[in-house]
Structures are given as structure tokens and as C-alpha cells.
Amino acid sequence: MSENNGAPVEIKVGAEIKGTVKNIELYGAFVDIGGGRDALLHISQLGKRNVRNVEDVVKVGEEITAYVIKVDDEGRIALSLVKPPQLTWDKVQVGETYKGTVTRIEKFGVFVDIGAERPGMVHVSELADTYVKSPSDVVSVGDEVEVRVIKVNRRKRQIDLSMKSPAEEAPEAFEDEAEEIPTAMALAFRRAMEEQAKDDSAERQRKKSREMRNEQDDIIARTLKQVQN
Image 1 (tube, one colour):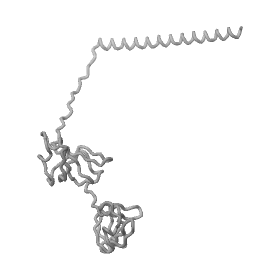
Image 2 (tube, helix red, strand yellow):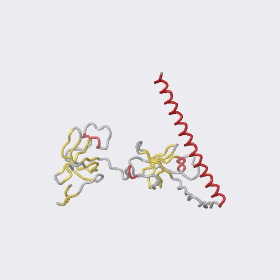
Image 3 (tube, one colour):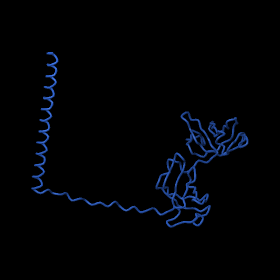
Image 4 (spheres, one colour):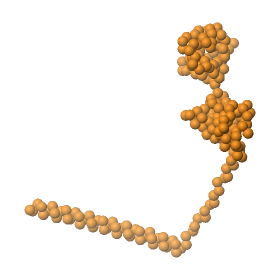
């Protein structure tokens, strides 16, 4: 919790927060965010790659705007200078439609920023309902477009998009099959077959019993013969 005019303010992940750099260490900087609380701005969250010296990015006494990326069970706060995506991975769902901005054009398709961690890609085959020879024939960098998510690979951090009109799925057609009512002859035939099956089963059981008795008698006879010898 922080304080705002004496009232406690809950600090949540994703919140934008202003503070003053209090002191600098090799691994990052501590930022005074008010209310007697400090937050850690790790060197990996300074918004630039391959930062070796924290003071190359922030200075003691400098006022900064940062974003909360973690609040642990003990209330310790981690910050980042990188603005978090508006659309987190768990919220990107297949079938959802978003407005985005074209950021890059390639021969195979275009990349569109929809507010996620990474831009999604619209393959050239998904740019329009008709054949498209070159993506630049349809869009330009900076264009605002409406796209639909058709695939999400969270492991690879990839989002596939489409600008095609959603295909109308025809309702599944089915017919109720009329139940066949058996005739009297069919019923009689069915009962006869059931009775025959019962008789066959009983006969097989009797035959199996006879074979077992004969086998047992044979074993007993051989055993007695060996004893007598």
C-alpha cells in the first residue's frame, strides 16, 4: 500500500507510478514511490538492451515514471521503465477481433500492433477475401486495421491474425430418424433367434463340461496307473 493525501493506495501490477530515484546499485536502482516505500528498478528493466551502468539511464534524484511488474507476498515492489502491454497473453483468444496499427510490411504478410507484447502477423493469404499479390497493395505502414485472431502460440509468443471476413458456419443439419416399428413376423423371428442362441449357449456349456470331466477322468486314470506300477 502507498499513500495519497494520507489515504492508503493499493499498488497493483500494471499500474503506472511516479517516483524519485533514491540510490543506485550495480544491479539497479531504488525508487522512492511515496508513503515511505521504495521499489526496485532492476537493470534488466531499464528499457534498453545491454545496459552495463545503471547511471547511464537514470540518476539519483531524477523523477521517473515506471510501471509495476510485481508485488510479492511481503509487499516488495518491482518496477520497469517499459510500459506493459495492454493485452496480456492470457487475454488473447482465438476468434476475438481487435483494432491495430500496421507496423511492418513483408512479402509474406504484414505485422499489426494490437496492444499485445508482440505484434501479430497477417499472412498475405489472410489480407482479403480475394487474391492479394502484394501486401502493399492492401495496406501501408501506419494504417489502422481491424483484425481477427485465428491462432495463438503462447510458447513461441506468436499471434496469427486475419483481415478476411469471418466465414459463416452453416448450422449443422440433421434429421430425426423415424423409429422402425417391427412387424409381428419380425418379432417372432427375433424371439426365435434369441431362443436358438440360448440353446446353442447351453449346448456349448454342456459340451465343455463333458470335456472337462473326461480330461479329469483321464488324469486320474494315469495317476492311478503310475501308483500301481
